Image 1 (cartoon, rainbow, N blue to C red):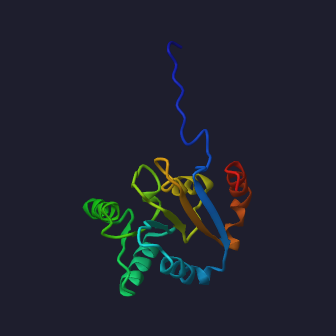
Image 2 (cartoon, rainbow, N blue to C red):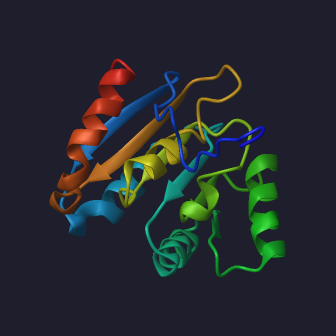
Length: 170
C-alpha cells in the first residue's frame, strides 16, 4: 500500500478543560428544574449560561417556563430551523439573552465567546459528550464553571467521570 492514511473517529485524547471548575451535584430527578431556577436566580449580570438537556422537548419546555417567569432566554436543538438556531446563538453572543437552553447540537463546533457557565440539567449519554459540553466555557484563556446534575440513573458513567475529574485535578 502506497501512502496509507490513518483516520480516527472520535477523540484520542479525551480530557476536560483545566480552566473549567467542574461541580457534580447528586440530585433526584424531580428536583432538577428547581435547582436550575435556583442557579439562574443567583446569576451575576455579566454571566452567560448554556443549559444542556437531553431532549428537544425538554429544551423547549424549560425555555418556555423560563420565559413565562420573565427570564429572557433562547433554545437551540435539531428541530429548530437553521435561521432560528443562528439567531439564538447571535442573541447569546451579543448579550440580548444570557441563557441558552440546548441539546447536544450545541456541544460541538460552537465557539461562543464569554460563556461563563455550563449547566447540565441532564447528564449526557456518554462521557465524550460531557467533555464537549464542558468545553463550551473556559475558552480563550478565560475560566468557566460547569455544574452537572447527576442522578442514580447516571451511575453507569461515574467511573469515567471520576477519571476526567481526576485528570483535571478536581
